[in-house]
Image (cartoon, rainbow, N blue to C red):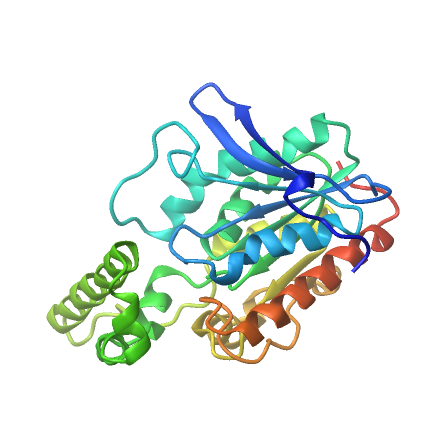
Length: 305
């Protein structure tokens, strides 16, 4: 690592918006700035072990990047209204997209030459929705992003009995002592139960739950980024169900060769990336994201508007 970035290089701030004040932590670059910003976009449901976003932002800042991680509107220290209760990922992404654009464009307004967005799960989906509004977008790293349509997700989702089995394990039992983790766990149980009931009630000849490939809006968003010459990487774990959905439907992901060169689906990391379940997975992911982001400035002649 080049240099050492600590809390001394971090600045809490609010980005003013007409409907809210978006809270973020700006991590200033150590040494010579390279003129490129990085925005971290979390999912709304995962508990990040070992302060993964903090470690990633500090690691990139040590390499000259100006990094910003945010709290979504109505969450954490950010003010404003957000959706309440369960919502499908399309709604979450659309709701959060203005926050993405505001954070990324603020870095450009501060004088940076370009911005790389790194999003996890619903955070990556929000980034895809927001990309047309982001100025000087230099790259997008999407970690374990769901790209199948709703029926495909229901068809290939984790079975209800699997959630029940996990709940009986020693580690899960300890986790259920935490009120927030307990709410997430039971939310998944209720959702899976309702889906199971719907599938049992549907007519035998109904197409419900049949795979239909990737969400066409997501495909269009990726193709639009390729036309803008914006590099994209899709990072998954070998045990992530989203990876198997994407790899199974990959033939529908690209329309032309230029898109294949710019939208990368590398060999998945070993294990389960989506929930950051082990320290090994966290370290592998840190290395993969860092290597890809650090390579971006050298891959582009100039940052595209």
